[in-house]
Length: 121
Image 1 (cartoon, rainbow, N blue to C red):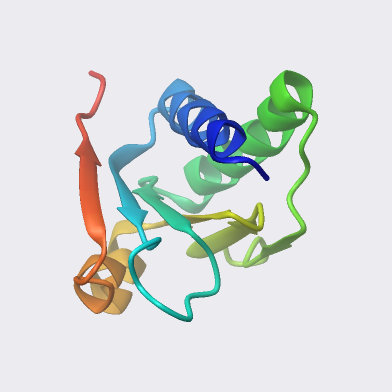
Image 2 (cartoon, rainbow, N blue to C red; image 1 turned 90 degrees about the vertical axis):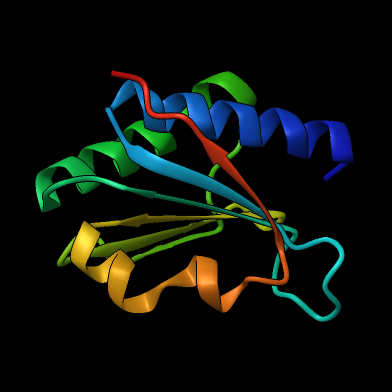
């Protein structure tokens, strides 16, 4: 995927998360780190399993409709505590707050350039 297409995907993913009131969105740019599984992480949270599931469903539908892209894989929908959507160059992590605090991806990937997106309220 070209860099412009990746930026379009990131922007659309963020917009889709915000549509479902996803909070504490962070974009981790991993491009300067060698041997990573992807170029970008988008990390966000929903307050319940229902909201996490709603964010994930909106992401799948919206990205398919707007950009014609489907995730390569989705994992974690069963419990909806931590759902991962793999768009190859961008991997989206949708957490419930407790799981996000536990796994602390922002700290784990502290070498990445982290961009915090303000919540929309």
